[in-house]
Image 1 (cartoon, one colour):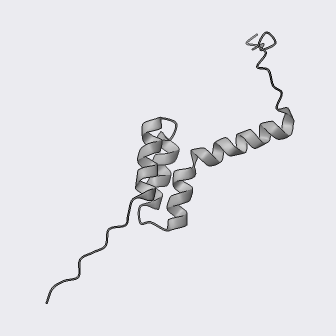
Image 2 (tube, one colour; image 1 turned 90 degrees about the vertical axis):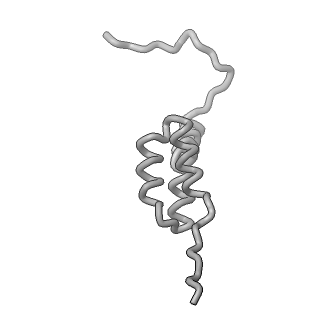
Image 3 (spheres, one colour; image 1 turned 180 degrees about the vertical axis):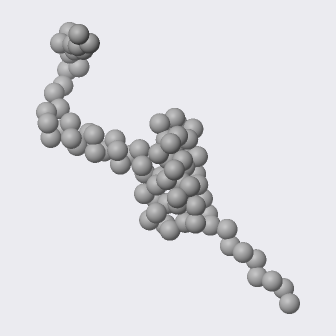
Length: 82
């Protein structure tokens, strides 16, 4: 009823099952890269980065904002002068 036939398309290469799984894994890792960086660095906003990455990561702007938050330099509080 709602079939999708791609038999007319020839992309010139065949991935196979291992290649397809590898490509899928690489895509997922690239998609969540800002979250992986944030948790690895232990930044304060790591949960915000994760939510932003999952919710808006499909848009390039959301992914870039999450990557910026994950890689920015941590704020060092100024020592109070006595």
